[in-house]
Length: 175
Image (tube, rainbow, N blue to C red):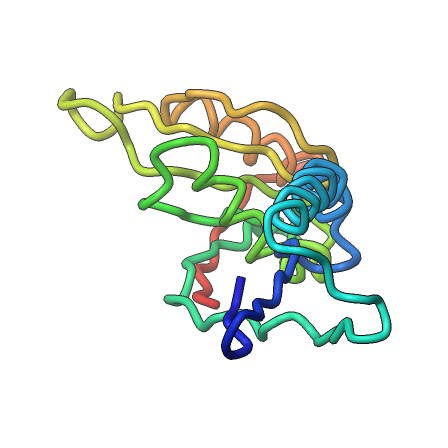
């Protein structure tokens, strides 16, 4: 809601996300009825503005965020990329993972590789035993899983081995 001067306000109902991201459509389906209901309740209290006076504007540009570390997992034999890992150490609850997925959508669509968002390691046991919450986002979104490094590494190594029937090597990239 934005003030337009004495006795006038503008209500903007926007959904964050890339228009091509299927989750943007899901968010819009959830929030559109809420935006309409809020607008209707406000109009009941304050009076409505005739449609001829409605002013539509483009959504605000996305805010700049900190770089997000990514790692492309490569086939050791041919160097083709076989997976994308996105590291989100600040992701401590599902909403944080979803926000990271929304921000990184153009990146994982561009690579078109199996992609996971990995939160920080949890607990106080030795690092190699600490699980992390991991959200699979591409090509199919699945629920968050809590896995130890050895449990998750098996998955990426299997992708790399299956690609050319050999091991893998990793290349870190920050976006």
